[in-house]
Length: 251
Image (cartoon, rainbow, N blue to C red; front, side, top):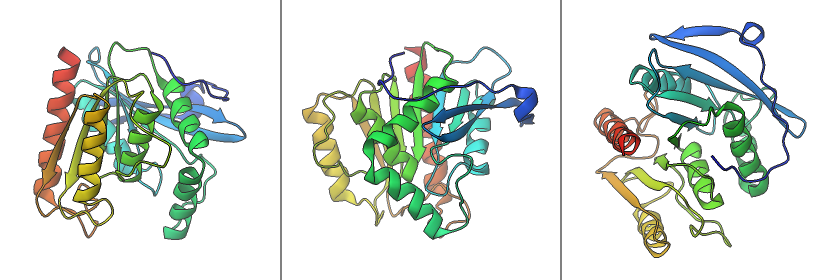
């Protein structure tokens, strides 16, 4: 797997030092690495049998927490090696909206750093699987599309209700894997105009892609407990995600 050249140092931290756990039958460990002067930890969930493929997951704007770890465990239960990446660092203070805005905004403002952290997390936790995919939620969905535009050598990029805008000067000419967009028709953050524009960009760049729109679903429709949670759309989008992974992994 080819990763963009970035300035980072990767260090594998022993499971005995970081701790291990078992989540719904999936063995979970942590992988530590650094980017510049910041330390990060990814959580790796392993299936009981040989994995079908590896799926990297990028968190929402509130940082890596139990939500992404649960999703990783769900993927492991389905036979995938799943890695929940950390883009904010172990020392980040994440106690509310202002903190979330500060950390996510800093990466939106520095796209080189944004890409470096994603690439470093993948490099640190990759085992060189034949198939590797990148998925993300909300902020993580925007990060997935940033990675696609960066030309990261992955087999698929999956965005759940992510930010769909393309920054000035960027495009999808270097995208290597198929793009799957799972989005709500009533999303106030990235609306149907943004989705239509993105689909046009992907078509013009000859990038294989598909999109499923969930009628009436708003932003964060997969996040149980949020005001936008939509159980029907959440379940359908998960099923679409797994069908995509199963098909791409078997091809």
